Amino acid sequence: MKKQTLIVQFKNKDSSVDIDWFYDLNEVLQDVLKRNRLGTVDGSDFGAGTMNLYIITHAWRRALELILTNLRLYRLDSNAVVVNRRGQDQYTVLWPPDFSNDFSEL
Image (cartoon, rainbow, N blue to C red; front, side):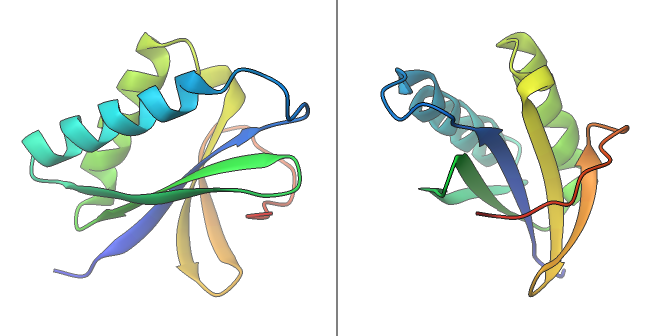
């Protein structure tokens, strides 16, 4: 099965904001993906105004369902953008369905 990378991105406009929730989400997603044998959280990074979680999966649709369920549970779904990285600078936005901006990892 081909592995794919999903990126869950949040805006981070103020570097002094408490971001413990981001690390908590990282742990929750790692656990739920592992328990369901759908993949793993491969890391995170902080860019210019963004925070990204990288998820490696072999079943991106099922992984997306679990990701969105947890984003909704923690009331983070309205602040998140989830994309499928298809290649170098090639992304397909999976969430939100009405996303109309250009996506950038940075």
